[in-house]
Image (cartoon, rainbow, N blue to C red; front, side, top):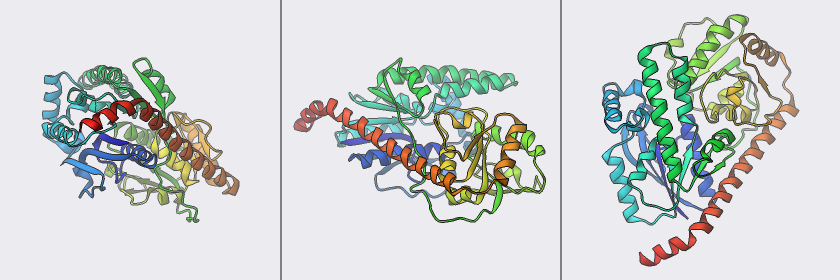
Length: 395
């Protein structure tokens, strides 16, 4: 099968959680025997882009609001004019549409994947019987959470509008595609009211589980893309509510872009910024803290932390969509219990059995995911075979 994968940001570098999820799906399609062409933007704030051979670049641009500066006002104006979500308007360009049209005129694709509901507007320029929506999460739920938590009137209006317009776009897109691939059962149940929906058991973003021993270099590790509001919210909660309950002798390392405000602010906290190898960073921690308070979909960093074999203390929300985690994972939602679980993990002996269980969990989930994508494509092939053999003859 030939698959056209339309996404927001080219994912092969796997620098952010959503890109890791997208790339996992692309690679699973390739392992299932598909030839995949990926179209998307380059993220200017990530520096020079090195495209994979199967990727097609629309343009190199800033996509984060904080980095876009005055362009963000243009995106918001466009969202008002088009009566669409701001988070969708920032990806809507004539250049993207022309690239899609060019690819479709040059090649017959057996299936088209729309990666993220924010690209639902592409259905206005695509006429294809088999379009798949990959729903990373319920976007409207996330914006509704921001609306409910905000006390600023302008922010409440912005988040309220975004929640309503995103919900309408998600519903319209889901009702117009052949099926939805969701990453949690909760999300799949929601989309099932519009079309066929299936859940993919997304695995860790690590290419393979590192089995070599890595020395523990610090007590607590925290990692994330801190420009994303739910991540920043969780980090600030940890520092304001959990950190004061911990001994000052502990060493805490924070990794990931967007938290420069942390530098030299806490005596026992080191802000590393972007780290080249997140797997090594996680393995260096005696315990990984994942203090997520809001958001949707599944968290890649939780899957990665499990795969690292290190102990984990996470909120229940950080484990959404993840059933039966290994014994290396502890759940805590209140500050005091979160701090107590961290201390227990730091003081615990490293158990070879626990690490082995985490390793097996990683392999089992990866195998399940590949089989799920292969099954989905097999069913899609059977349903579209006749249609595309006719188109191939005409071509």
